[in-house]
Every structure is written in C-alpha cells, then in structure tokens.
Image 1 (tube, rainbow, N blue to C red):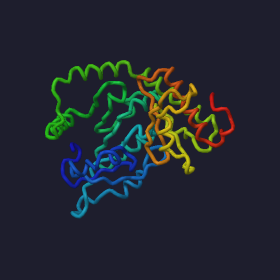
Image 2: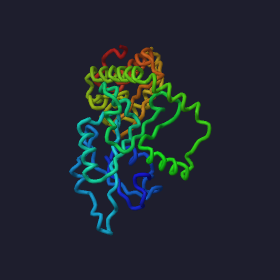
Image 3: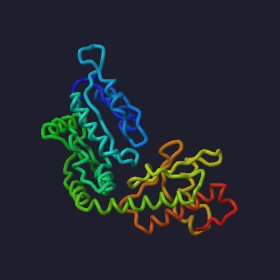
Image 4: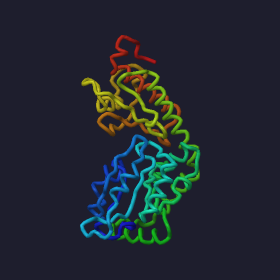
Length: 299
C-alpha cells in the first residue's frame, strides 16, 4: 500500500507466490491493487520479458498503472538464483517500478549459499522477513528507507496493526538474529539427510527433487497410485499404528500440493528427533510402496 498509493495500480509477481495463494486476494480487497501473475519457472524465477510485455501505457486511461514487482525468496524452499535477482533489480529501475522482496525465509537463502543477506536484498525498495520462522516466538520485520517506514507505520495504524509494549517480543527477535546462522545451518543439514534417505530407497512413488531440498524444507513428491497419494502419506506419518519401534513417533507433514508433502525442520528439532523422523518416514514408505511388500520393513 505504500508503494502503490493510488487505487488501480498493478503488481507483477510469480503465480506461486504466497501473496497470491494464501492472502485472500488482499492486495485487491484492501489496497485496490490488481495482480498480474507470471508463471514461475521450476527454480522460482519468472520471465522478465513476460513482465515487459504486460507493462501498461501510462497515457491509456483504460489500463491499470504499472507500479511494482514483488519477488519471494525463498519460494517453497527454493533459493531463487542470485544472478536473476540482479536482473530483476536492473529491470525494475529501467522501467520505474518499485521492488519488494517477500523474504520471509531470506535468511535460509543466505545460509544455504554461505552469503550475506544484504547482498540478496541490494537494490530492493523494501524487504520483509519473519523472526518467527527463525526461532523467535512471534514477529516479522519490514525494512526500507526512512520515508518508506514512516508511511508504512501510517498504513499499519489505519489497518489496526499497531501493538503496545512489544519490547519483550523484540528482545526475543534480537536473540534469534544473534544466534541465527549456525542453527539454520543445522536445520538444513537435517533436511538434506532426510532427502538423501528418501531418494536412497529408490522408490518409484516417493522421491525428492534436489531443488525441493535446498533449505530446511523437504518437499516429497508422491505419485498417485490410487491406493497411495500425498494426503494418505501425510496422514500415515502423523499416526502410530504398529508395534514396530520405527513407527513410535508422529511426523507432522503438510500436504502442500496435490502431489507433494512438506517436512520442515526447525529450531526445536534435535539430531535425535531428526533421526527418529527419518526412521518413521522410511518405515511408512516401505509400508506404502508395493516394491517393499515382501521385504523386512524395519531399518
């Protein structure tokens, strides 16, 4: 709402973005901003030439007003290529567009690539990131110029978003920022181990694309066979049905897509818990994939 102050502005972003899928069309509902969604590529990027072709003629009274590009990084656990982001920054400046990064998990991208967050966000007019996704109990940050933040505080006020006495929450956020890198790296290590284990089973039903395990998330692709699908896999992971020791924990996975589930590692997951989760996932895959029907399930 700060970047697109007039109603009838238009925003360009990838069609898989959280802002499109999970926010009730809030840009239109609240801000009066229309979205022009661009198909995402497998690596999370989108075609800037497509954006260029959709830019509006500012002198045509029939058109919305091209105002802004938004980029999500990471997107569905994928680290958006750094080189492409530099192209986006250049494109936005050439066409006079504001540029926002939904960096809810931007620290995951920095840790995964052993780089500095400031390099990832250079050239953007505004950035958001979540303290709660880094281990804090609650909180997000909005970053931008002094003028931008002043205007954002005005918008927050009119939307009823202000809070009182938030120092204790901010203190928790500071702790997370100080302790962050090593803990996120551990989450990512555990996620990679889970992905490697799943693929080592060489199942024709369950697999993990390397692009789907770059950070602390493991996106497991599940082939729908009728008797097996992503929903049934997620449900079974969350149940204890057998006496086998490998089935004695619950893994709370999210069926994010019709053919994928998400397993997410976070600050409270230890190596011991991660190992138990791996055993559970292996056990359930072997129970559900006919390939293992006549084999010993345990181990």
